[in-house]
Image 1 (cartoon, rainbow, N blue to C red):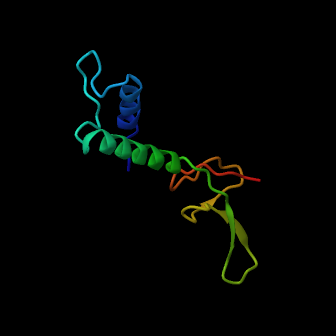
Image 2 (cartoon, rainbow, N blue to C red):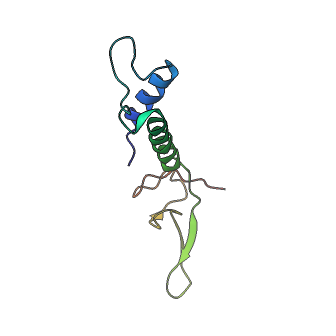
Length: 97
């Protein structure tokens, strides 16, 4: 899992034009294979964080006999209620139609 605080600090340093701020602090990605490696690793972590925030659509699942239906999380398939905004198991936001 990517570290959100590290990504934010890295992006803030890149916006300051250099990987070393005037305060003497260093970019948390410095040493990740030069400037290109630094940027690549940071972009990769940022993408992972954004994907973790993607919403999922609920799915319908039925019992073995097919007479009882319920809603499940589209990510982890845990049973959820129609008024749930997030899955209580995996934490994904649920997008109800």
